[in-house]
Image (cartoon, rainbow, N blue to C red; front, side):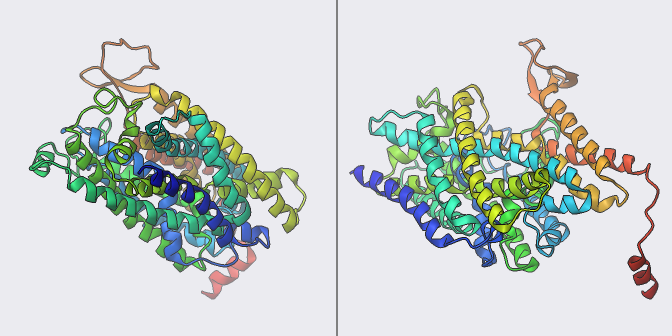
Length: 523
């Protein structure tokens, strides 16, 4: 009976890349390859944005967040982040998107080039490339988890390294031939697929749960959404930190991250891109709630036992995949696993390639490139970044067993190092007109160093949670808790604006040019 599952999975893994190649068609220019000359409907881009930012991490790890939550933490407090996401996207839609879409830019960092110069543009782009490599390395590893579980159920032993190589090859196929148009459509299709898979899981779970499970879940605070009792500095998802941190994190990820901006620039105009971005915030909120609810249902099904100690799993992020393989009927199991695997094909390769070619390589080269050269180099770098992602995913697989955080939290933690500096650089250019390129670069580097110092060094140690500088040398008997990660992006933005704003004060006010003076006089 399980042969049907394998057939569905194999057909999906082969068919989805081929569908992407067919949808993408023949790329006529670098612009078509990077941002699509045939503009895409806003609702398709909306689904693509949601798939790109959550995909496998949402399907596998968000249910674990609700499953593992203690009564003190609350099972649904993760949704506070999603509320912040909605607010952050609304701000980006009216502040930053018009600068990109109406300006016919290829990458978000081209705006920094126009505002400051090529030095700041390259600095931001390289930061994006490095951060995206690490974050998407985790995403690719996350998708290898259910494959490993499925193969083990059939007595086939396969390591994460072998699995991520196969996934990487499938991902690069349609990105190489189909460009951003293929990426956006495949994203949209796969999102609908894994949501339908989640519906199937809920239907099956509903028939397996004991009477009274819902009341027990409420008693265990599994449906608590807002946490006003935890410390805003050290709690898991305290309202103040999660909401405002989520808003600024969303502003950074959707306004300063080429992975998302590239998709938004594939719409026909500013209004369409704004609709796609704002709608994606509400879709993400519903999707988070959906998969958190699955986590609560699994908590009731497994009676809350520890996934590693109680079920013998390799790590807790294997829990959902374990349920799918062992508890779902044949056919449905294959359908759900195929949807999860498809999430691996939410490719960032086009964004990485476009930023590498237009923001870095072309600036270093210093001689104009023909459109044919840009297209050729775009495809070359698509392959190069695919190889790097495979290596990065394999390395994450090697060290994942040593960490206790769900993989979705790990991915967001990586972004915390640089998102504040990226968003701060954009806001600095908009708020402080006197800020120069040197001001922006110094502020950017200072911010990365300060945030890195906070993430790696500032700890709250002891029962009184007194602030101290630890670096791992504190008494092991003491309780050690990190500053909650949702403050990393707000802190980064604040440092960038503070340092850059102070540096800009040393410049004399710029005299308006002749055209500006004439326009002001006419007004």
